[in-house]
Amino acid sequence: MNSYRQKKPWHDLGGEKSGPVRPDQTDEPVFEKSWHKRVLGLTVAAGAMGVWSIDSSRFWRERLPKSDYQTFTYYEKWLAALTNLFVFKGLVTEEEVLKRNFDGPKQLLDSRVLRASEVPRMLASGSKTSRKSKQTPRFSIGDPVRTKKQKETLLRPFGHTRLPCYAADKFGTILFCHGNHVLPNSNAHFLGELPEPLYSVEFMATDLWPEDNLGLEDTVIVDCWESYLLSAND
Amino acid sequence: MYCRAMPHDSDEIHAHSLLPTEPELRVKALETILESKGLIDRKAVDAIIDMYENKIGPRIGATVIAKAWCDKYFKKKLVNNTKGILADLGFCGRQGEHIVVVENTPDCHNLVVCTLCSCYPWPLLGVPPAWYKSDSYRSRAVKEPRSILREFGLIVGKKTKIRVWDSTAEIRYLVLPMQPKSSFGIVEKDLVSWVTRNSMIGTGLPEDPAARL
Image (cartoon, rainbow over all chains, first blue to last red; front, side, top):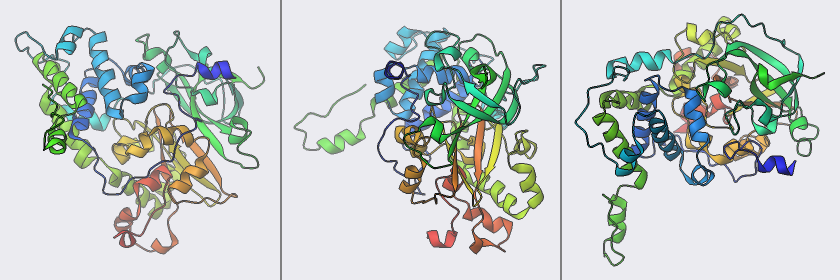
């Protein structure tokens, strides 16, 4: 248990001890600082170019070095991941980032760039992750399942997964089947969409945290791709 | 680019408050690089900000909830529907492509969190509030939801089951709160302002707007 906990990724917070939550006031602004807006706007606009997916964006935020992840504010994480992705895809150089400047002549707008007139339509349509596929779901609503260990769901060492540590290697029950969805474990690393059935799996809190939830019927629901799951009888 | 006020400046505090912060300078630098390289249309960035600052917010979600309270047929189609009914009604969009509405009842209270990042039904509620994105909420909601709810001033009886939805994937969850008895008989358009943002996340209940003033 302990050695496994030490390997837990630092963004994977579910079940950790932490201080009180501070509810906001109803008149709190949408953005606390004006640069927060720019980071959000740039991130959404850059994503619309289609060079990377939401899965890659998340992976690059979650895989910031531990000290950065734990000290950066929310939009600093976004900014760091966005900058790193631009460099990773070769659209911006490290030198330009460090010098905070591009020396060359101003370039024409790339054809992939989102235009202002396209923004309402882009935000309204979003980008669905459901895919038509002939793959028949292995599990049905009500089936008992067991989740794999978190490491067993990774397609790369220290790679991307949406199975939180606290819900790994646990027994649960299929609550919803959502059809086939893009697999983030692959898509985040530019390894293809590899869509597969996605389920909402319900876990009893007493199974997740036996020491804390005696006698309560509370549950936690986690969305799990089929490759995260085993039959409870396997 | 970045200058510090000298320690003996008489106006030290004021001078500091006017200095741009380091991330503010970095985002400006990145935006300038991207613009020079033709990788961003600044007007598109402005338009995105305007949408999230002024147009997309919890009032959209509240409209759906008020309709569900008033229209039994709509509510029946809405609850636990994983086929994207809201998309058919036009309530869909970026970061809310696959929305599932979960209903609070006397026997079950629903609470939404994202323990891995900050997934949230953006087209219905806008940008998530700071507490939703905080380490504390992300850490504790799945393990001790009743303590979290107490911090929001909400006590859920032991006979009521709590379902915590950890929205780790592209499925986003919206809570349909119970309609307060004191609002029965009010017309749909006036019910919208009873539906608070937190009541749609599960950390609050609908409120009489008159009592909020």
